[in-house]
Amino acid sequence: MDFQVVVLAGGNSKNLTPLVSKELPKPLLPVANCPVLNYVLHQLEQSNLKDLIVVVEGEDTALLVGAWISGTFIDRLHVEIAAVPEDIGTAGALRAISHHLTAKDILVVSGDLVSDVPPGALAATHRRHDAAVTTMLCSIPVSGPLESGSSGGKDKAKKLGRYNIIGLDPSKQFLLHIATEIEKDARISKRILHAVGQMEMRSDLMDAHMYAFKRSVLQEVLDIKDTFQSLKEDVLPYLVRSQLKSEALLNRTPQGEENSNEKVSSQNNQAFISRILANASTPSFHGLYSENPDGSSSTRKTHKCCVYIASSSSYCVRLNSIQAFMDINRDVTGDADHLLSPNNIIGPSPKLGTKTTVGPNCRLGEGSEMGDKCQVKRSIIGRHCRIGSHVKAVNSVVMNHVTIGDGCIIQGSVICSNVQLQERVVLKDCQVGAGFVVTAGSEYKAESLAKKEK
Image 1 (cartoon, one colour):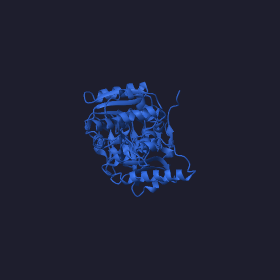
Image 2 (cartoon, helix red, strand yellow; image 1 turned 90 degrees about the vertical axis):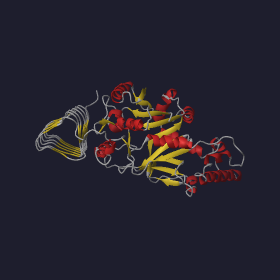
Image 3 (cartoon, rainbow, N blue to C red; image 1 turned 60 degrees about the vertical axis):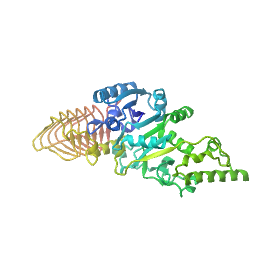
Image 4 (cartoon, one colour; image 1 turned 180 degrees about the horizontal axis):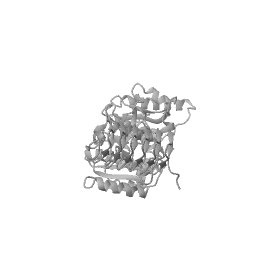
């Protein structure tokens, strides 16, 4: 398709503390014992999109991610690893690597997206409309949009109380309005409300952080708007707003309605925008912009902002919070198990003691051993773990090289790599950071346990 693909993989994430660390950056965070980045790269490979730039935060992360990709996708993908500074945002990351972007169209994908929607479908929609930007929208998961990233434990019951408002044309091809992180009682401008008859307002869809951009448009915005940091919150809304205005309206600073002439001008602008919205689904939609509000002609035509709406049955969730991490690990070993690699649910060579039971929707990693009379339900056990007898794990994720003593009970928790749980530890809704030792007989509920940073 002659698309250049940029995967924004990140590095450390405060929303995922203590799961991530310098040794385990976000792109390598395991989902069913497989790095989350694998799910994105696999989908791109399936869509024959194999020319990739994977952008990570920091040189250390670049080395780790590069080594993993080289070992996993050797001779399958052409991948360039680009390290950028931390905390410059998604737009800042693209700005930092803009000199590497050479193709006509750029596909930008979040590296934490776990989805069964083919990226090629978005790319094809973008090419069909010759759009400036095409964004993928998907249904909000049952647990919420997870944009701000609720953590597990004590914050698990908190609701975001914020919504995405998306306006579509009647044919659901063009993106006419987008507002993110809107509070429940926020107001929408009169201009938008006046256009309700021609615009379908949706709050049940979310931006999936997969975009196709015309490179020339993207680079122009990044150059002109050098303070833009976020694709979702800055670049996309800017492009959507500007498609609803002629060149005259774009360059005009609205003034207060202090006299009748300005009132007439405002009414003309409103009428002009309403005409645009009324014709949004016609083939000549974007050609209508050659007329200015005063009736004069303009040689400049606007760009197109299009959407690809994933089927409501599609799976599409971003791993950007601890709760999302738990949800995705549960889903891909359950209803979304088609996303898993074809390996067996129980990996090669695990050793299970007598009367130990492993229920459905579980995954056991290679080389792990479990003692007698253990119970594993809806949980994932990593590689080379040593688990004693009479251990119960329910709705939990245990990473690699974890030692769990006899009689431990783990429920709704994440146990990171190289953790040691001594005998009779009870954990409920907890996260235990890498290398931490939980002393015998301890009981914790809704706690985050991690080594103190030196």
